[in-house]
Amino acid sequence: MKHLFLAVLLTGLLTGCTQQPPKSADELRKETADATARLKTNTKAVVEGIREGLARDEKVDVNSASKAKLMLLPGVDAAAADRIIANRPYSRPEDLVERRVISQAEYEQIKDHLEVKK
Image 1 (tube, rainbow, N blue to C red):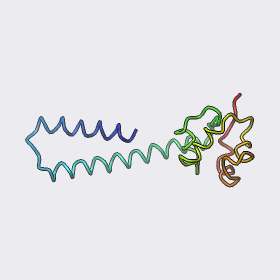
Image 2: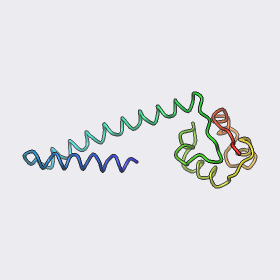
Image 3: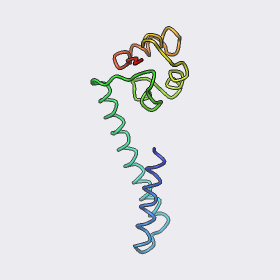
Image 4: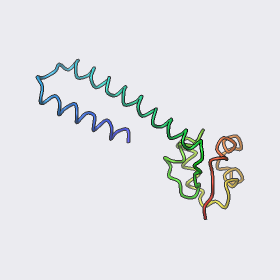
């Protein structure tokens, strides 16, 4: 997704450059760096908003959630999300700890956000 944003951004910059007088390489680098910094800030804000939304009410089904959705849970990184997916299906959320997919401490952080749909 990050790469898609960058591609769209660079395409926009290149399109804009053809309609204006040519800019120096330094000007283009600075504009690209500024745009990338803004994109990074905006992306962080979106991710934080999603995390806050998950923290409210939404439950994540450990049997069907995507890797990206699992990684929105507090403390769940790519490796933990991969382990959760690899050990499916689950009968109940506690299976994550009983099968040693995640630690008890990790489970405590996310247990209120989990459900198992059958």
